[in-house]
Length: 203
Image (cartoon, rainbow, N blue to C red; front, side, top):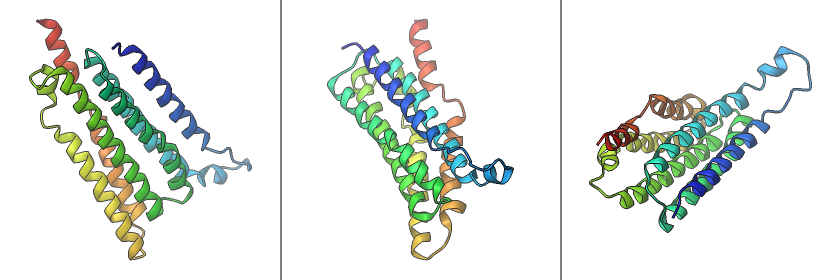
């Protein structure tokens, strides 16, 4: 099965996700700096989510580029990933509007966690098609970066829930920095798949 249609569909959905997120940035009715400054939680949550969606788009592009074809399992795994990504605008808006309160911060982390799990499933389906001895599979290895990401999301969720239970503001001061740290980790260029593909072409 050709993968071009899957790539085009996925790019379109991700573009719509970003468009929906930016629409949450409401224009202030007052022509003052204070009115703009008051929007900082919404803007900060938008920036963080934009980075996350950008990271997924980048990694998704490389992953599908590595795939030689598309199976039924890959199609469903891709839809599964897009489903969780499509919920990012909702949790982004809720968290920003409520100034990173514990419950919205926990749900935000939950969606990020499920996106990470869905991406891992898609990656495993593509690697199953390529074969465990393929250069791409060897380059990904044990995927420690992915495992650290999941641990970061879980920690952020736990701190947010604990903060809600003990009436502490952990969403802003602990959970959000953890989510940001995971995003920063992925901003560091990860060229494992790209190098593997270049190695294949060089043969």
